[in-house]
Image (cartoon, rainbow, N blue to C red; front, side, top):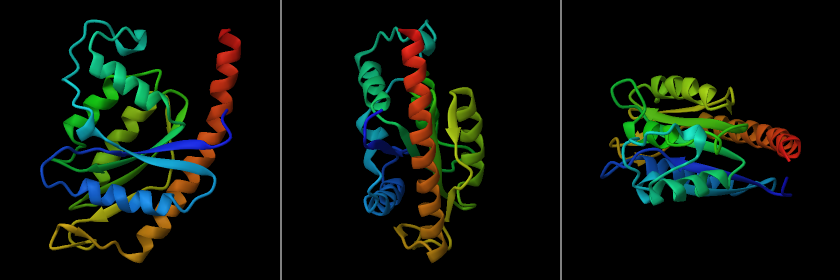
Length: 195
């Protein structure tokens, strides 16, 4: 395990004019105050993955597309994740689900927290992502942030989160970092036993 944990803040929307980038930068600003982890933005807009279309399952890690190999390298380099997701039609964006579906081992035995936003704070998108995380063997932390488009954004565009969300975000980050550290030992033990 490296001495400093690496946490990715994943921007889960690629829509033009999305609110996700502003939310992710708010998360990064708070996360950057920590001394127990290094946090970086990972934007799906920078990783234009095709729809999952390969014949072999992701568990085999025999990707045919160079874009997927790059995505694998990026995701594999982190110990944990904070996923920033909007809610579209009671679900997370298809681009986010697709990005998660492309990989398996790169996510396994790592921690994930969620920051949702939408009319209902992204709650239903986060709920569905927790199910996906379980299948990928990502340990989702209990605390999450739910930002309301009505109460936490000015004119539905500019993030102005209520004070309690900063506390929720700090708790989410605490849990993600703690679990990321614990699971790093699990991954190290697995690597030793596989050698």
